[in-house]
Length: 382
Image (cartoon, rainbow, N blue to C red; front, top):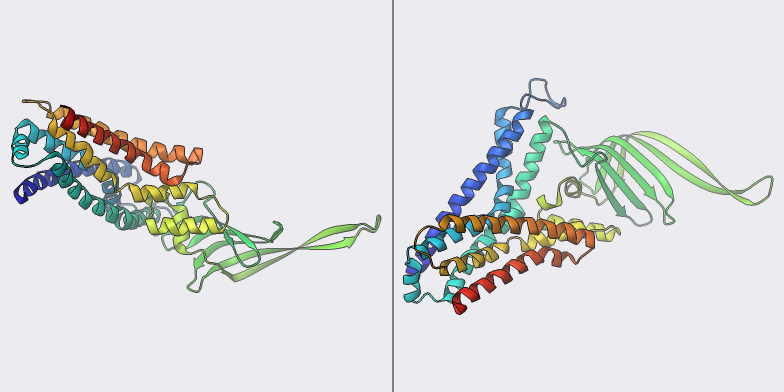
């Protein structure tokens, strides 16, 4: 059995590595071509001669590789395993392995063990390496091209404190981890605006507070009085405006939360997503989109198991010559369809307000059912 395991694992690992390298080279080439338009540009924040060079573009493309690896790994596992299984069937080597004691369920357990290794590898890349490299890539690009921002208004966050509720808007985040265009709106328990604070620059403090520079603060005071004409109660508002060189705002909104709000949810780690979901739930905000991405982060590495299950039925196809190219092409189409379906179910689940875990797990469950059906039909019915 060790000989069979060494044979299959060696062939499959080499095939998956070659397919992965091919995909990464192709995507890196596209990324590099896309970055050529920014060469020689400067965002005006650094020295005039400190421009975006080809070395910066190459570094930026290299930092995107872990994210591409995470997205392409299930497809690479499928294509590489299909190629090996189809080639073994074509050369009748798999028939010999079957006569040597490699039964259907033993072959399935053999490939599932290999798929489990790729599950762990995919989880490590997607949860630790890819988010860190993506953040580094965005900071590198922000240094020479623009700041990190979301849309035209930036990121919006909400926090409930002991007595009042705060809504915070951060326009951009600089490479130096400074916030630009900060606005803080304070509401009382009745939903009325108590104060507004604006500052062009703010830094994250070390004691659960933000330091706002050149802050402009407006406080609203509402008082009741009697109208002189009717004698009925009337409300009057007074606005007190102050300008402060430095203003300390206590908050539990950390730098990680602001970064999370400014980055795409699919580029975040599982722990960051979970923390941000808890923050949204605690402040009465909808977290459906982030919950779906959280469960996709949980289930997506498991798709490597589904991919090896889809590839195993190809070993039981009977053909003598040719046909491998068509089967590999079929594997490519199956992998692309899984990737598209995984994204489509995420959007549909968000629009239709499905259970987040169901929207994330449905594509994998569908393809697992198809693979088991094909495996049972080819092995036991034919």
